[in-house]
Length: 336
Image (tube, rainbow, N blue to C red; front, top):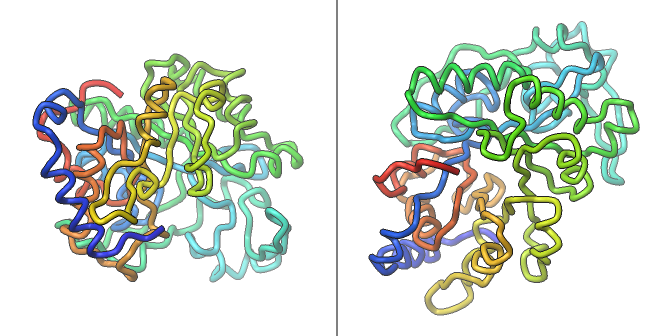
């Protein structure tokens, strides 16, 4: 459900009217930068992650996709033509393919058909628009990163910034990759253990919309897991069952507010998840952008982020970490 301008204004009012005592007792939400500052820089690249850290992000989120030689790369989608220049590379033209994904035919160039060395020659595409959060200018061309490089970057960023920068890994289409003998969970778990993230308090979160994938991660690691909820999951979600395979739920931000009432009010979702012992990381999705195309005006989203903080969300997942940071309480978050 996309938010309207009236909804944003009302949500800003919700934040302003939240009881002062409740705001004082709550910790401000973690900022999880989806693909880094990917509204402003090529997603899942050094430039996007570096900007996200500078803007105040606590976690750097990346999708994971396997290469033919079994290396996990930082890509939200394993079809690469939308996010790289692969379609303009004549040496790879013969590897254009059509595959069946979730019952539909998808054509393009897929990570599992290339070696990591080949994919490292590609240039990642810049976003088509720009946010007006104060970070203009075009970044230098960026290469695809591996999951290992994302973790290395987060450690270096932690040392440079003097605060812990975490990593949030997103797994999708697990059954598809398992059928190719490229299991995402096993490779992800191996790197989590190798890099010292294999404990619940570590700055590592593994996300997936698939419960079976999260169960597999839980059998292989002690890292925290987040269930990516679809909008349709929210009304009837069984959080007691979800607690068996996740420590966090990640619904769309719109599922946390009843926007049909005269004045938007929180839905039961957040309180129900908390009662089941689950943290809540609300997703502010690019696909739910009510003002397409970009760029945004900072005020359009600041009220939403403020309302999420006031309602008690434990985290927000966004490609605009600068605006989320401005809306967040001044008091720094000390733990996630």
